[in-house]
Image (cartoon, rainbow, N blue to C red; front, top):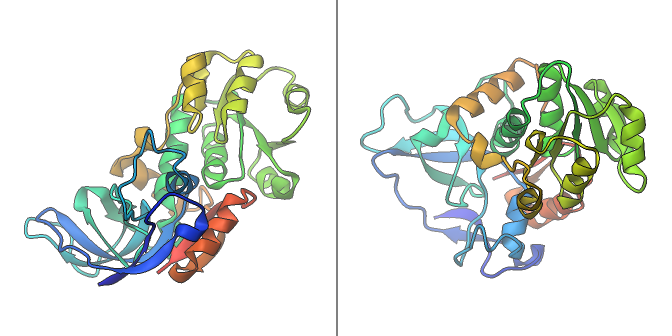
Amino acid sequence: MVKAVRFHHHGGIDVLQVEDVELRKPAADEALVRVRAAGINPGEANVRTGALEALFPATFPSGEGSDFAGTIVATGADVTGWAAGDEVLGWSWERSSHAEQVVVPVGQIIAKPPALSWEVAGALYVAGCTAYAAVRAVVAAAGDTVAVSNAAGGVGSITVQLLRLRGARVIAIASDRHADWLGAQGATVVARGDGLEDRIRAAAPEGITAFIDLYGPEYVHLAVKLGIPRDRINTVIAFDAAAEFGTKAEGSMAGTSTTVLAEVAALAADGRIQVPIAAAYPLARVRGAFAELERRHTLGKIVLIP
């Protein structure tokens, strides 16, 4: 039996429980991993509330969590190249990483670079692969000016840095409280709120060549108003708006692979990108972790420490 986050019906943070759960043994191609850190994400909150029921239906009781980093405890009979004690990071497709231990196919793990802290490694999958896919989708390159909404969030903070590594100029849409950090990454910060379109045009009089939306449909509408070509607008969340306007909607699913995850992990390990950790909560305080996440004011990632 292991401690794991569960919820038995849709609702707010009060439906989250930490329960004793019987963990299955790893199948032939799987590994059992002791979780040292597991990131939390807005998508998990939306699954819990039922906002994404049409796309990601829940069966109850439902577990939670995709991101994790930890130490292999045991492997299945057919597994080669991995052994107990190996430090890894990866993802679960079974909503199961917010737990003391997780069972996953070994095709969903990579070796944890020694330079990565557990917190960063455990927070990297969703944010890192989503940011990678979003930057790739708009074909960002030197000479581009790319606007990014929710630029200080878990995905946004990595997106801004990946764009800068490609030589693009970044217009970071964020609250003033995170302006210093974003400015230190080389971004031009534009405060969100009323008058945003005018502030963007003033900050980039030569025009915006691409737009990455990490927040919601209003930013897809804004990108269209700015005259950006539809194939250079990408949203990771506003799927209905993307369908309405014919923009791209590439996010974590498009970016999910061990190759992408390893590339992002290497960038973080050698310091070419930073992964800010806003807070770390014990598993027992999962409600507090999501309460902070859902205020949407954090810089970077929030993680659970089982």
